[in-house]
Amino acid sequence: MPIHVSACAKLDRALLGLGYVERHDLERHLALTRELSRAGAAIKDMGAGALMLAQVAAGRYEAYLEPHMHAWDAQAGLLLVEEAGGRVLPYPGPHGLLEGGAIIASNAGLFDELRAIITRNA
Image (tube, rainbow, N blue to C red; front, side):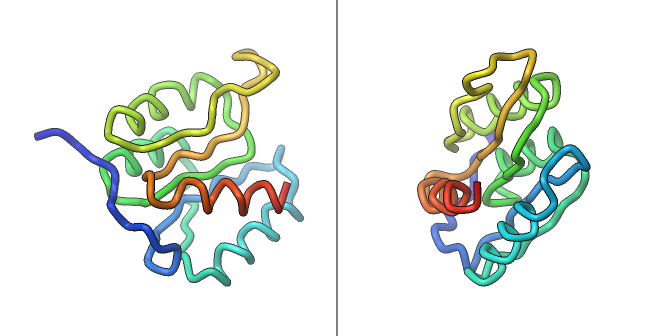
């Protein structure tokens, strides 16, 4: 049976994965966590970005966000999300595959709102 991203279109009903590792700016991470929490989203960090992307593709999470992932962790999962009907931020961004880039992988109903929140907290 094919997998598909979730149909949830409200942040106050969403389960989000939010990745953090020490190379990310802690204050930005905390600000983003606060804003998403205030919007009513449930937030988890399972510590495995590639797995979290698969969870989004399978519809178990509405989105996964991380300020930076390496290509070897991101590429397959981003393709899964797209093939399951989701949207992703263009990857890897301006610095190419060797540098990696930011991740927003979401269902279509939340993508634009999440992108705006990330932009405000960048």
